Image 1 (cartoon, rainbow over the protein chains, first blue to last red):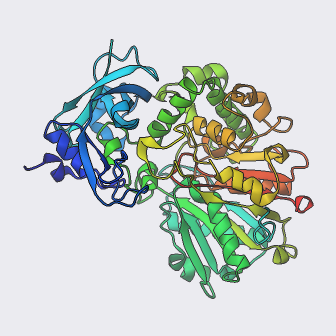
Image 2 (spheres, rainbow over the protein chains, first blue to last red; image 1 turned 90 degrees about the vertical axis):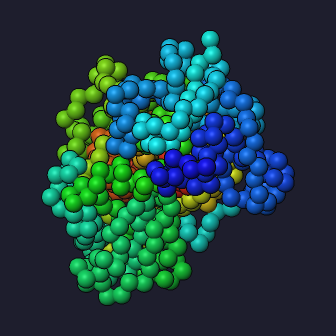
Length: 144
Length: 389
């Protein structure tokens, strides 16, 4: 499969999360865990610091969790100008019990009135778009 | 146990900042501003700039020693390095300079930082070193203001620290800037109402919670404690400057613990162990506040208060010179004096020991400077008058 995000590569960070983005483009939400000791490893990395294994399994995880933190951005900075028309927009860090509390970032979809730490959210996947810089993206919505 | 190799064996003997320019208006490239700051810091110390044989900086500093040698008349460059990571590395840069001196690798070390948008990029892009993760950029997170906002929101909503502490950090900085003729924010009348009514940048941060961006250069000169005694200025002895990251920290995007941390878990404890002092002994502190909330986290992690007592400790009255329990950011700091990636906080920490701050804390003998909060690796430093050695 050809992945669209490859053509829009962002090079910062650790850089071990290609499989994450590929899975999203395939319509699946997968997170990595160590192939040997089965520890969830997020953010993705190249080696398990616990047991020393270099192999990871990318397993499907339920897109369901709680808001660990959030911010309402009132200004679109230089490298995220694509969102200028959306300000103010809310970005959520969701904590996922299905992956030992891994925290995954996503822009909020839907109304933002109930946003607060601890509130339940559910996720969906948006296909690559200009807004998400040619990458697919996780979106979180508050569960009523 | 106290670190006898590094405790009080070196001193800051020269400090200087160039004038502060609104970003993009200095008309001079960063290299020239770095040279100006270093030459002037050497003159402050009474040392010829050609004698500087060590160069230490941090973050994305591009004005390395080799580039400055011809202009400084450097007799020999014997030591040079960049310390991890961004502003988190400033006290660590002092520590590395001290390490070079006590191990005989250099005699006169400049620690410095210069930034300019003249022929350069927007500072926040320059400082970020294009190292922002796709997990952030894809989801509309770019600026440190937004990333720090996430941490401070957790501090407020989950740890119960009052949002008012952020405001009081800002008010204290702007209050101090009024008496500092060099401060960019000296004419800004900031009161609680103006703060609350200012626009949001990224909640919980208002405009006044965020540091500004300036063109400027800032430098300090370190030498051995022996040599410091014979120089022009009263020495500010370096008692300790540990750097590091605890097991749950480092580059972990949004999965670091504790999430609200400024990164000083373990690092602050080592500062107290290395120096033999504790938070109750500190007379004055320069708390790197890229954003106010991260400064609150830094105060908590240095043991000045807990999340539960932060509301009591972090008040305007307690944070201002001369009589507050812990006067902070007495030059106006990154918020109100100006932002040269935090470096000018070192100069102010030194001026408090010299007794020459425009918001002097009477008899200050222990002066703290904490590095850029929230970085994957941070550092913190304690400077002292001879009486506290």
